[in-house]
Image (cartoon, rainbow over all chains, first blue to last red; front, side, top):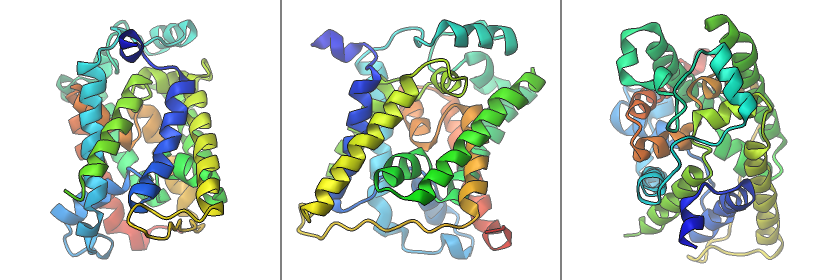
Length: 186
Length: 136
């Protein structure tokens, strides 16, 4: 049992558990699963700057910020306390592609250190991967009204066709970046 | 204390995201390159279980533990849905993380996640400031 908790979980364990988070949130507090809203609440709480979209009673959404705090705590427990393999077990094809196209050599950890170290902010890679990438995530999710949790999981679970449009958008952007932009960058 | 239940559920959610490695940039690359079923299995089975659960809640008119009627708002279409979705998709492939995983990465000890979260906050703030000028 202990070993099962330590090893990475297969999709058929993790997926259904993620799915159960949707009814769990509804049952414990009539709340819809959605993580990206927390970014808006933080902006509204810290730098509203008179912007109408950031002027609302964010205190009514504190539950969302507490949930996100829990997600960070879960990252600590799931990785540091429960243990993890040194290398994420991605397919050999992906590893090959990343070695040849992106010239990655270090596959340890959750993210490639060669692209995601803070020291990289001294060159274009850090600004592209950390700053530009993060900016697009924050801008795009709010423009679309949700992210993977709010649209893909919560929205599609509730049969919202609008969320399907959003998810198609997510994939169009992701595929363009991976297949068209990445090969030109490296 | 009324928020404690959300802390517990958020923590469980973070553990699941971490243990299934969906917070890994490598997994997201594998997904966008169609080289493994893992991510599709996670997202797909999550949707199926969520869908069945919501149907059960609706059909049985279940109430929340506080006795509230459970309501789910319908999402309305506007052009921001796909334009914003596309922009987020670009960022998802770059950072290898959607907002939930960014927070889980930070908790797991990835320092760079802090920079990405601040950048994401700047993105959300910029969207908020430009909102009236954007196409919908």
